[in-house]
Amino acid sequence: MSEQENKQSKMVGKQSIIFKDPPCIIAGSSIAGKKEGEGPLGSMFDLIQQDPMLGKNNWEEAESELMKEAVEKVLQKAALKSQDIRYLIGGDLLGQLIATSFGIAEYEIPMLGIYGACSTMGEAMSIGAMLVDGGFADKVLAITSSHFAGAEKQFRFPLDYGNQRPYSATWTVTGSGAVIITDRNNAKQNNGEKMVVIKGMTTGKIINFGIKDPMNMGAAMAPAAYETIRQNFEDLNIKPEYYDKIITGDLGYVGKNILIDMLKEKGYDISPNHMDCGVEIFDKDEQDTHSGGSGCGCSAITFTGYVLKQLREGHWNRVLFIPTGALLSQTSYNEGNTIPSIAHAVMVEAV
Amino acid sequence: MGNENKGNLSGVMKEQDKKTRDKNYNQYVKQVTPKFSIFNNCVKAFIIGGFICTIGQIFTNYYISMGADKEMAKSYNSITLVFLSVLLTGLGLYQKLAKFAGAGTLVPITGFANSVAAPVVEYKTEGQVFGVGCKIFLIAGPVILYGIFTSWVLGLIYYILKQIGIV
Image (cartoon, rainbow over all chains, first blue to last red):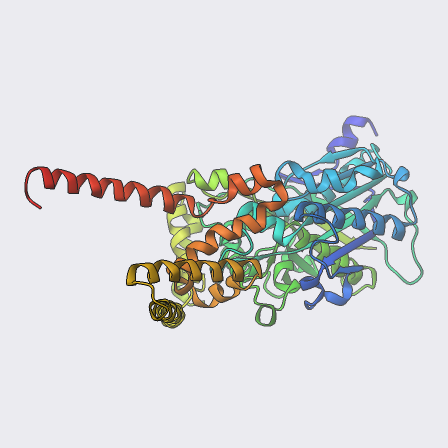
């Protein structure tokens, strides 16, 4: 097969990729905050940090520490050293990705920083899988994080300011999740556990349906998730039943319902197998989180803590993981702009 | 979700014109997004806001009984309420009260004090000048600016009216 054919053969439909020899996710780590640890998925996380400051001086350093711990844990689980990793692909919500830069500096891994807001985990895994499949790296670490207080400070109000959050608002997850992606030769299969591979992906476009309210991100992001999921079905010529689970990142209760209804309009019923990480991660009545969890960490730790486990243990075989991101900034909001959104779908399968 | 919402969404999805689509989508989102009950919020704001004002009246009466004249007692009262609000903000309690009370804690002077104290707590990690100094009026700034501007405009109107002999 010539190189040209090799390249073309992986493109499917308009904006999807299917790998011939799918890269493997050999390990995942999840570091969660206290509130996340008290939520329904609490027992699934590797480590729960009770102190929101993590013994540091400020929120930004605390988030970096989350990332540092996530890298340490994932390397430990994969029985690798930082020198073994060829690329680190990561990002976070803070301006100029400072949580990532400061958090991972000491590991000295060649790094590509990315910004996809809360869709970052999907973007990092997509790029990581492509690097591995393309032969540019044998081991890639994909990572992201978010911190409730850091995100509130950057995007909303100081924490102690007395205001009321509307029901459509989401609660930024404090946590960091990391995965290591390798080629098949570097993946060892554990006894009785299935191998988890990245089968393919559908990369999202910027979608903007004119929502301006940053307290209703679910409504802003639902059309982006809809577009990416529909495109995935069309590119691969499959129906929703192909997947055991279709897992969106942080649409929350408001966005989840909109997404399901939008896909129904196009003749796809995902309601039996849809799950949203933002809905799963908190108990909205007990934990007062309104529309659900959000932030890069939301989909990342739900994926690494919960979804990977379900795949390994064979409860699910095919999963479409679609972290969703709202790409607004305080400046764009102040200047009266609407919220551009994006969603990246990663096809994760147990083999 | 009722049928009329579904119909609406289908209209959104079929719409070719982006502006109309966005407008329709915003209307649809408005329908499907849960909202606070305005009545409940008003009742809560009335009770807590009234409670804060009652405390203020108690302080004022106390200072008068201590021998202050009415104007002085009012000033002492403001200082006391501002102090209590800042203290509660620092202890992380004012936010909890505000979550329940809404405008009830926003409108009294305690709300203003909270809006000045909260950025101090948040930004002290960025230093005394660029953190606290630059960010202290992050929320209160517009209130101060437009408050002063409005009183200047009113003063000007008063002056003109006085000059032409109306007042």
